[in-house]
Image 1 (cartoon, rainbow, N blue to C red):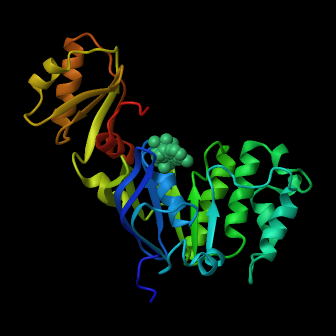
Image 2 (cartoon, rainbow, N blue to C red):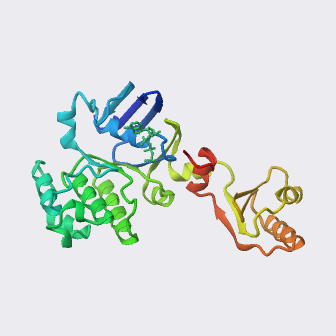
Image 3 (tube, rainbow, N blue to C red):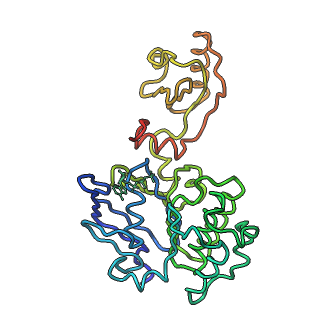
Length: 308
Ligand code: ATP
C-alpha cells in the first residue's frame, strides 16, 4: 500500500499538565517527499514529531506512521525509520565513529560507515567522545546516525541549527539524495530559506495546529505576488504614503526602518513610491522589488510578536 501517506496524524492532542502543546493537529505526509514543518517556538512541532517517533504518547487523536502505530507497533516501526532528535539523545561518553558503527550494526542493510563519516566531515572525530565534539559535529553525528540504517522515513528535528554554511550545504545535499532514493523526509526548521530550498511540502504549525499547508510556491502565491521594499529612517508616515498609492495597497514597517509596499507592481507604483520619498526628503536604500518569500508568508500567518 505505497499510496497511503507515510505519516497520517488526525486530531492529535498532547497536554503537559494544564498546557495544551498540541491541540487537534491534522497532518498527512506523502511518501517520497521532503516535508518541512515550520512554526514559532513552542508551536508544538517537536512534540508532534516525537509522538510520530513513538517517544511520547498522545492524549487523543490517531497517528499512523508507515501504516503502523508508533507506540503499539514500535518494534516493527523502529528499524524502518531514522530519527535525529533536537536534543541529541546520544550517550555523552560514547566515541563518535564507534557509536555510528555500533548503530549501523543494528540494521539489516546499513550504509557503509566510512563514506558517510567522510562526507559529513566527521573523519577527524573518530575517537573523540560525543561530549567533546563541537555543537556542529554533534549535529552531524546525529544526522549520520539517523540515516545509516537506510530508513524509509527520516525525522530530522532542526538538523542544521548551529551548523556552519559548509555543513549546512552538506546536510541539504544528503537530504536531496535521500529524497532521490525514495526516502520520505520530515524536517523541522526555523530557516525559511532551508524550507524553500528543500521542501516539496510545507506545514506551518501554530498553537498546536496546522494552520497552512502547500508547496513553497503555493504558499507564496497567496496575497501579493511581489512587494517593494526599501530601508529608510524609522517611523515614516505610512498613512500619508497610502494616500498616494492605489486603493487596496498595503504599506508596512515590519522592522523599524524597513518598509514593505504591497500592491500590483508596475513602473508607475515604483515611481509613486520614490516620488513620495523624494517629497519627504528620504533616500530609499536597498530599494528592491521582491517576490513574496516563505518568511513573509510565515510572518503574515503567525504574526510578528515574539513568543514567550
Ligand atoms: P521550538 O521551535 O522552540 O523547538 P516546538 O514547536 O518544537 O518549539 P514543542 O517543543 O513541541 O514546540 O513545545 C510545545 C509546548 O509544549 C511548549 O509550550 C513547551 O513549553 C511545552 N513542552 C514541551 N515539552 C514539554 C515537557 N516535557 N513538559 C512540559 N511542557 C513541555
